[in-house]
Image (cartoon, rainbow, N blue to C red; front, side):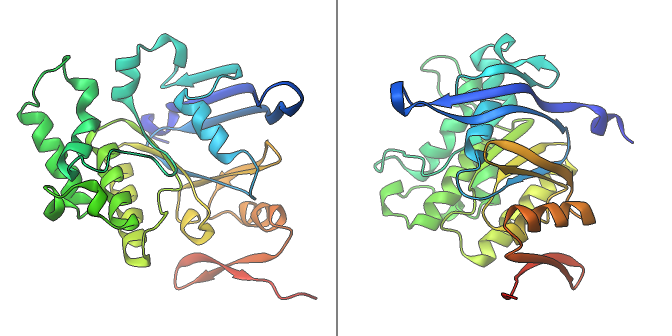
Length: 265
């Protein structure tokens, strides 16, 4: 086992999350304890309402919670905002951005943690943004306003913004939204390349066949972790089938794990 795999990128201990107020207050996460190794791709999966996005927001420090959260071995609260923003980038669901901003300007927002107040981008900033836009195949639109793009094109620009941070840890909530199958494959290849560089990627995915390409799965149900394990492991496949009420089955196809619908008995 390498030194990188011994490092904990993210860790939560006995985390509880409550959302809403008064009579509408509801517990969404129930005593979750979880440790994610650095330099790996972990996908969080589970039924609707399982708490997947909530858990990702806890990792990002975007939700108040009971319990302890650590980033790269240090309490999340001990990091300054700027330090945390350099180490961890975020791509959320249905993120809004001003439609009159150009693609270039949106991607450049990822460099804000490195820039002094009102400072102009430097050469390193411009190089990081160009690389991110080329990686997501959005470079040719760099002068276009965001409002002129399709949903899939917009998603690729927001992904470029997250990549431009050059963070050690990338958190992505439903990153495949609006992407067609070829660009979903491009996203998977990009994530695997980032992991080879030593980065850590944590994704919430509804696309279970894509999630199975990750190094590890975390399976949630009703705000609790029901399983954590290698995506290739038989016990992980059994846990995955169980959490979806055995309405799908995991099978090998041409060297990859896929899911198939299970016919009623």
